[in-house]
Image (cartoon, rainbow, N blue to C red; front, top):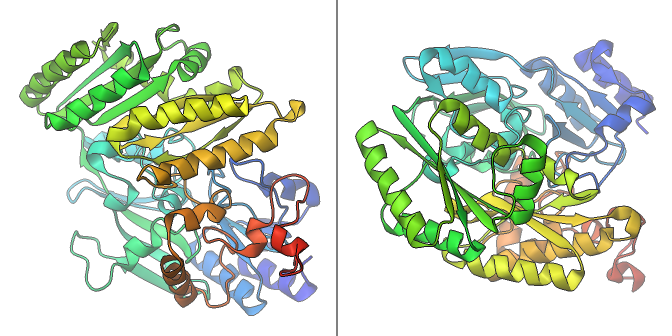
Length: 483
């Protein structure tokens, strides 16, 4: 519990009307999209401006209170989970689109602006914001920055870091700084790049200038069915080998297709083992030529059905099915875990085969829907908590993430490490690497108050699992203590 002095300092920082202390209301903030990890905060503050955030952080710094910045709470790695006896600084009331500059193609935003709303605001000027996570209707630009989110179109257009020019950041001691420049020229060390993807451990981003793109002249989208995930994976490799860089290449296996079709009726084939959504955009002549090449490559690999979207409505319907896939899995399983990892494109078939085998060994189903173009997997481990399957599902999810590293990939492509995969970090990084990361973190936050216990492994973190407490082996041996 907070002492009275700390409580009063936070109320003074943002005003009593912007503070939540009711125990029932606080439960709304106990987890993000990874619901297996939960912790009720002591207090939630809801600032409306950068100065409000700075005042709240300064109060936390003075009273040595750990704090966690939170956006829409759609994260899937436990990165926004509160800290025991800590404060949540929620940015949901900071939703202003400060400026749209159609000449320089930039937008200035507060962190609570949703990803899709940026594009809606820019559309009147023939512009849009390229990163498009599946949760783009609800996820916010602040959260996108924390996780360096990508989305379906990141193959051609890159991730959040490729579209953020500058940021106003409140550092962990309450100092307000600007990182980056409003042009492509960055002077000195790229501290903007350091903060993007740091999962809220280095400060709180309060105002962002992003790059906007012109709406492409032509967009062509197709949905192709294949007799196997291997055949679909070979198409992806051949597309890139042919020098074609689609705007997006998405793959779904049969379980994911069944779930999405039940949810939105997108016109997918329920019996097909795998499907690809391929989208090209750009100048009309180039787009048409490459589209013919894509069709030829699909047919060469045994495409059993090829549906070309002829209208904007058909295109939207295809994408509605793909973007609904995560939530739609709830129609075929009472519980599921969304994992996130990356493998080289050349090993897609191998990793999917291994995942199927691992699921079979664990007695669990795994649905696969992912950004095939850059090898960013999103396996969904299906389970029933009431049937006692949760622990097996968690272990399988961890094993899949670590398999990606084994095959030359990464623990995460865009969902982050958070609480979920922190203990797997030594599988990917050596002791010197982790020590360097920790030193960077300490340079920004020597008191370790800003989103502590996330991203980097600690004995405390790795001794804890969701649900019933399970002692870490080192604790049982008397080497470490539980705090």
